[in-house]
Image 1 (spheres, rainbow, N blue to C red):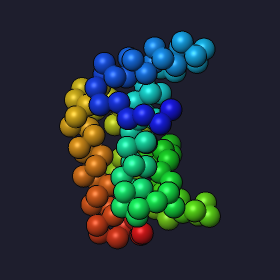
Image 2 (image 1 turned 45 degrees about the vertical axis):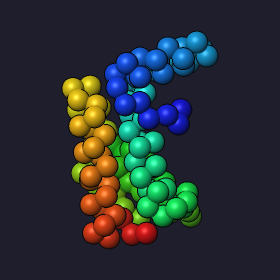
Image 3 (image 1 turned 180 degrees about the vertical axis):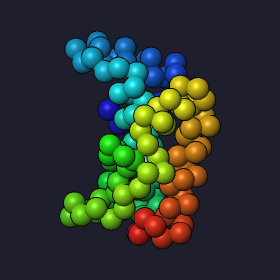
Length: 112
């Protein structure tokens, strides 16, 4: 799943499409993957390529380099909190993730 849903209606559509393929993702699975994809897109845009990878961790998220070394781990974005926020206001959550990622990149906390 490489899509970034922007509304709960888009989440429902992605769940339906996955179920038609025999998969059984929950709304939370789709939202979490979509938010991770959004973080990934922001990283790719920042360095013009796929050299860094964003992933959720139990306590937040991390960024690894092309060799798999963790270059950043933080708790600014926690998956379950972001999923709950997305359900309440998808647009605000996407903007929050974008702002957080930009701040981490611009301040050098996520080294490029």
